[in-house]
Image 1 (spheres, rainbow, N blue to C red):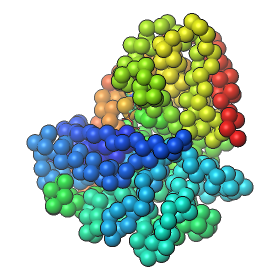
Image 2 (image 1 turned 90 degrees about the vertical axis):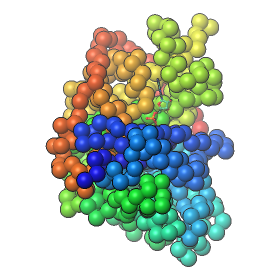
Image 3 (image 1 turned 45 degrees about the horizontal axis):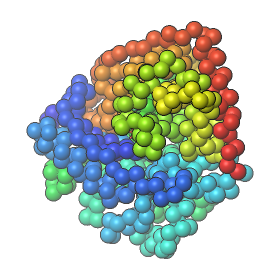
Image 4 (image 1 turned 30 degrees about the horizontal axis):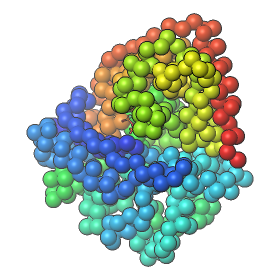
Length: 501
Ligand code: ADP
């Protein structure tokens, strides 16, 4: 039997391929960034062809670095930036338009028109109407890109989120690629019924989406594989592709939050906290999303409550790329540590409006509390604090919706390498923060679900045994200090709301 399992992690900023052994230990990886295309305010695009070739490059690169071949892989899982929308022609393999990224707000008008259906959508899909989700992005393409609607009728325009696009390409593309998605990705379209986990005719009518464009919805771990990689492709062998999860659900699996009441928080481009609620669909009153956590063959879907924050790590990128006060993301830590506190500065990075728990697309970014005394160091510190305060708002909502009080917060994602950020997070929450040895939980979760499908791991307990803590940060602020700082933050949030009308 092949000794390893591989996972494609196609994220917002980069693509990576990772190979894991039976203990969940990393054997090899390769990672490459791709272009962020920003044509006008509020628009964010990726080039789907660039993404497909980056995925091929990281697969070939990781295998080469590990001295491996495709034959060493028992299975491949796929995890992906969620909601990002691609429409392509399956006969030519060419996209009809750039991928519209989850942060993109161009479908605002479409979403506003859905306001009367807010309660219906919440009930049927677990989601509020928001530009974040794929449905309004797909509708925008159908309405604005010439020829797509007619092409859809001829079978020449398929819709997919990035999992679908990656799997279609990996399994043969124009030469027999399969058109599938998993439950977790399908649930982020506003087109899937949360209870049945199938496309819903009423929702398709509401968005005016032709059903033949949509992929088949499959379990997140599938014994009958979605398809096989091609011998003449980047893997170089026929390997079953049999696990797929949206990135945040994959991280939840990678953190082995596999029982009700277990939660994780991922710090990447945005921040995403998920709490496993078991087979129970918990509606949110506090502004969270209700979403599938995963599904497996012959088993009922496991659900989660989710708090999504649009801008966290990407605010660090903004300081680097647009403002220019740091050269690399890692530079933020010494800069922020060069001052003892935020000097009264609060930064609400509401670049795409505010997501959970506010869901206010009329919010925009603000920096408040400035005086002549302040420097770039205060702005750096305020940026790290913004990540932590936004997480506090989500954790409060989680506690109020579920009644679950976390003893510790399990964290992962690219920004958790920042020790100062982790200490601030423990201080702001008043809850210890713990990071596992394998911080790449997203790729690990996808590998786990692919491996389970082929019997590489026998059951969920095998996965639980693999999780090990690396480091823990304990709260150091007093309760008064914590509350005073959070009150200031909430005043700043108030001022960011209603900026655009
Ligand atoms: P994604 O999967 O969303 O592409 P990653 O998990 O790879 O994201 O994390 C990348 C994000 O983490 C970037 O937005 C980057 O700005 C942020 N980041 C990376 N290193 C640091 C650091 N030392 N401090 C703060 N943020 C960081």
